[in-house]
Image (cartoon, rainbow, N blue to C red; front, side, top):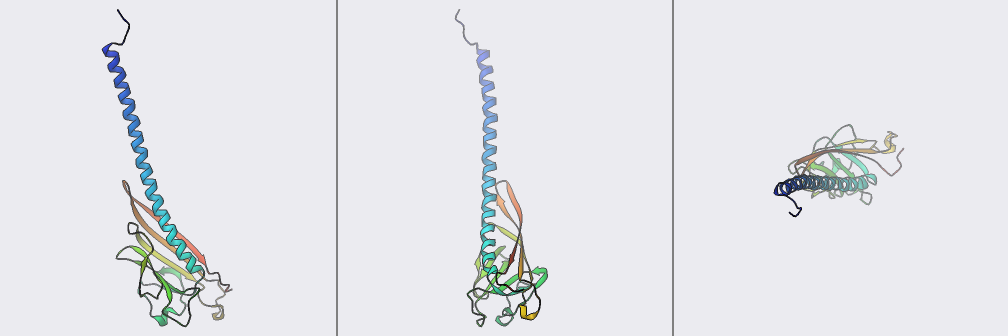
Length: 193
């Protein structure tokens, strides 16, 4: 009689191999799902970073900040005047660009939340046209400004102008959605103290 494997030994070996492979494939699929989720979250973070960096850059070198507690774009006469909202609740921020003409009220930069599309928007022409700053799949639930020190030094506030932006929202990721809350603080570069 030749030594070899019996049918029972072969069945046990194949069963053990199948169980090990099933566990291994399950772990691999779990890792692939976690990687997709991490990539989706990373995409949302990158989108928000780009939007906030763009806003921060233009706010930092801007002047004549005008914060509104409603989402109605101010008239050209109103937009050329400074207005703080130190207690928060600012839903719209307008200001003069660094290369803007202070005598032209139609060239203000304006940021707001478009509540119909749940996107952050920017206007470079005092609210005449709007461009989305965030991706359509990112849902912005709230966008709030706090502005202090917007009055020029001649008005006597002696505070360097600062803008705080708070954004809350969500974005779809595999297996559900992820919520985020982002806050950025910007101080004007022009010395006003």
